[in-house]
Every structure is written in C-alpha cells, then in structure tokens.
Image (cartoon, rainbow, N blue to C red; front, side):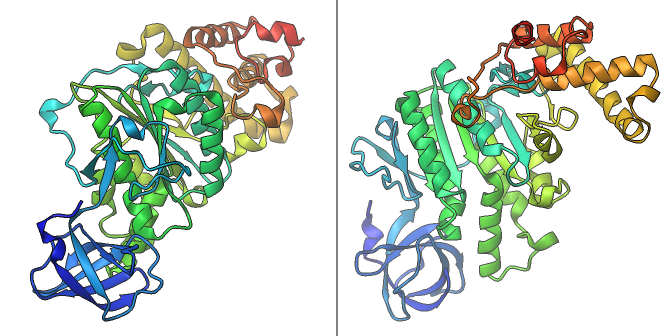
Length: 462
C-alpha cells in the first residue's frame, strides 16, 4: 500500500500520551494521512492537524510505548484503509484490517479508504418498508425500517447487548444479505462470546466482525466505525446486497472522540463533550443509507450515562434515528424482559399508511391502556386496588396481562433461563394483543401469559 510518497520521512518532536507532533522538512502530508514509526513500523499515527509549514499533529491508533523524540517516521502516502470483498466474510478484524480470529490474513480483498462521503441524495431510495424482528414488543409498538437506523437506549446492565444479539440471531436466518458487527469500545468478552455463538448457530459465513475494544487507544476506537461502514458500503454498492449493520456501542464512538478532542487541546462544550460531536456523529450516521442498489439497515446500542436521556450524547443520537427503543431499569427489576419501555419507545414507521390501519389502531390502544395503568399506579400504591372503580380495575387487569404477554423468552439466553427461545410473527402478536384487549383472557391468571410466544400457549400453562 505504499505510493511514490513513501520515502517522505519525518522526525518525532514531541510525544504526549497518544498525541504525537512530527516535523517534515520535504513536504507536509495531508490530514488523515497515516504515518508509521518504530522498528517494525508497529506504531500507527493518523494526522489530525497541520500546525505550520513543517509540523503536523497526529493521534496514535496503537500504544506509543517506545516512541521517543528524534525517532524517524514514514509517511504511508494515504489514509487508513479497510479490507473489502468476499474474502472478509466469516472473519474478524481490528481497525487496521488485521485478522484477529487466529486464522491466516485473507488474500482476495481490496483495500479502500475509511473516509468516504455519504451517498448523494439523488441516489437514495425513498421507499418505506417494515423490517420484522420476531420480537413482539418491537414489532407492534416500535416497528423497524428496512434501511433505517434504530437505537437501543439504556443505562448499564439493562440488556442492550442481549437484545442486539437476539436480533442478530432472528434476522440472519431470515435475510439473505450480509451482517456486519462493529464493536466500539465494548468488552473483549462480549466479542469472543458473540463469535462463538454465531459459529455454533452456523450464521458466520454471512457475517463480518470488526472490533476496537475497551482496552485499545481512543484513536483506534474512533476509527473502527468508519472501517466497518466501508465494508458495509462495498456489499451495498458493489454486490447490491442488503446489509445489516450492528453497532455496539455508539456512545463509545462519541466518547473516543471526546478523549481525542481533549488530548488535542480543544475547549470542551457542554458536560465535557467535544465541540465537534454533532459533525463527527453525522459523518458516521449519514453514510448509513438506502440507495437504488441496496440498503444498510443499522441497529445501534446507545449507552445512556446515568440513565439521563437529556445527556448531549443521547440527544444527538436520537436525531438520526427512525426508531428508538428505550430500555427501562424499572421493567428489568420487575422481571419483564425484554425490558423495553412501551411508552418511551417510538418509531417513525408506526403510521397507518405504512403499518396498516389495524396495526396502528391496536398499537394506539395498547399504549393508551398502558398509559392509563401508569397513571393509576400511584392510587393503587396509596389506597390499594379495591378502591378503584370497576372500569379502572378492568384497565389494570388488561394492562398487566398485556405487559406479561409482551415479554418473550430469547434464544440467546436459553442457557441462563432454561426456557426455549420464541420467534413470534407480527400477525400472531397483533392477534394476541387484540384478544387481551377484548378481555378474552380475563379469567386466565396473569402468570400464564408471562414468557410465552403465541397467545394460545397461555392455555397450556394454566
């Protein structure tokens, strides 16, 4: 990957953590150029600023141990590149395109720059289609869009990664396209477990994994999303296939940008975030789009710091999404899994023109019933259920049964719960909700509706 400029040599003038200043006497490399240093060229630096006619400032994408002033640096003559092509399927990569699954480096691949412009408006597709997941509460109340962006919002430990893995499990079997999993700043354990699970499920041949984990420098975590998107764009534009892009976790991308911004000496904005957060996030999110050749459907986990949805990171991410699925700690503590908050979760797809009149009417009725129950909870806590009017008591009974029916055993948690995972079609879910709202199940105990698939399974549990 060397070019005619490969002989352009520089000298390190200062090293401050991951920030490195380099002097070039011949000519100055452009911004985003990759430089290499060290005996085996193992230290990789990306230029983020040109300071004057002879000095550049870069951020190291690898640890800077052993780097010292006066050391020689080689300009690679181009930006960071990612491998694309059929040879990447069923493999696991780091941000530099090195295979990290202990197998040989793929050979039949092309290398493309990770910095690419979003597709122009003229090439974008404007169709709206529903993307079924087989998870009851999502398909009814917050349907996903094919080629859209969905966010899974939640604090620590409410089940974002579990929900993401369940969606991978349900969708890869259904769809003919390619899945790309991008792990940004998450735990190494999760990546290793996911790889093993996907291998056992037999879905690895249509999957690519790219990781920039928690223990890696911020430069590497910041660029891993761009590398994954470059791979996704290849399958969309060159092979005309639909791509499912899973990102865990988009907050870590923003956080890596915040760390870099601080190290580069930029003045922080609100709550310590980088002043360029909106632009950085847009640069990544706008590349996820439908074109006339294929679609990139993206599902992104978003960590919400301290469960505060007014945090700038959550607010900026919300604005890019077509569906927001909010996970609630309160529901998780009640054992209602998936712990999705039906009143806070929303989707731009939930309109009569897209999902149909019946689905829309039912979804509104479910929300209305659950909202009334939420209002009555304070009265029940103070005075007890007996003090409610008969009509209100019916609402509470319906809402509690709906809440339990919208729980579901997952395939990915079978080994922990001992319950077989269930995939439920949209028609079966709508049918079940309609029958609960009609009071067909008012004589059934609530527990018979908990953790079942179709509504008829409740009869077997009584």
